[in-house]
Image (cartoon, helix red, strand yellow):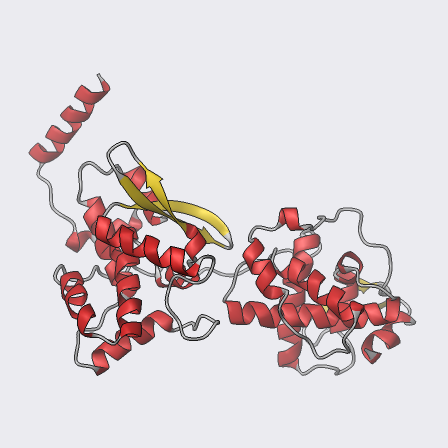
Length: 358
């Protein structure tokens, strides 16, 4: 709190970092820039994320000011790019403490005032208050929060792209059957975890990260004239990026049953409330420890991709949409697992397309 008290009376200065100078900053409490994004619960991309973040605590005296700081920090953080839940809560606590300490000096919590670039920089770049490591951490988190309100003041950091990582080879054809076969012999929790992974990778093509973030509310029935199937809404940064149908009745029934059990909770079974980052890998490791074959979730997903890509009835555009593939280079990486076609095969398919269009 003393940090803000000293800053409130300080004149505008130009702070210098060790490697480069920061822009000229003004006193905390100055009027916010005119171009600000107004944040409300209606603008939230993911309400569940906001409600989770509201449950954080900070080491500050209890009272309305602390409650306001936590609520506004949760609102701001829930508008940032989605990250791991543990890191998300840590970032929200840092933003909440920052808002609280600023409000102690100025009398009220106001994220639009506190998260301007001048205010954040003035707080960050002071005389040896933070270690270099802490300063980098706080800067990353507060800049991300400020970017929500003032995107022009906090431009995205420039990241140099490295070489594209090739897709993991598809799992061997028999692995899926083998893993489903051993599931009944496992202890209940491990069995439920393995079946969830198999159903979502080989039935809907979800990645490990998508499995960890999937919630029961993202799974619902889809009524078709022929029969009812299950659809899965896959989210990216809290927003639905694609919807994948699960047409296998056994997988669909199991997933829908699990979704109804957990409601808005995690579909992937866990012991604690927080989802571990290595939850999927841990299942594979435990299988190996028990003498069973292990697996790579990405390889299982890519076996699903190969199966769809090998079906002439699945257009490439549909495959890209269902799998969340940005371009077809992934299929080039998986070429060894794809079927080969003769010129006669290709000509027949093209002639059939012409007949359908005609």
